[in-house]
Length: 132
Image 1 (cartoon, rainbow, N blue to C red):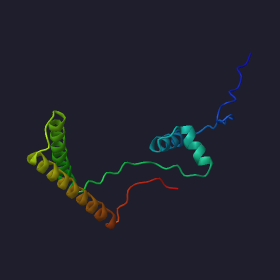
Image 2: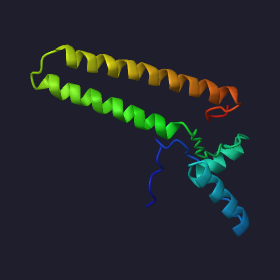
Image 3: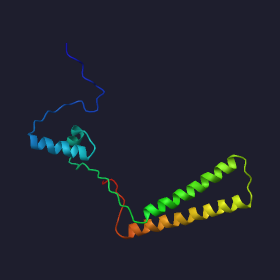
Image 4: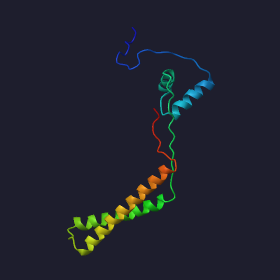
């Protein structure tokens, strides 16, 4: 007795193709680079769509590590203030000044990040995205 076909399958028809070692490696490597199965990669090729290989590109401006450290310091200050207020601390002049200073630093850092992004884009860099 034969097994019934899965009628709910997205691809109900099956095609077998024999390839040599070289072509198999190309399909396998292409599928890995595109984060697809070899079958899906081959389907995309048959549909005349070039599968997109994703490569993670990291551009680290030299200012970034220092900026991250500044954000860490501001975050620690907000955390300390949150602990103080959650423990029942009152909003006095000292804590108000600390809070105001931390907010000003955060606003300043935001401006630095915006300037870095503008500079990054003006120099011809773009963020990676999907090709149509």
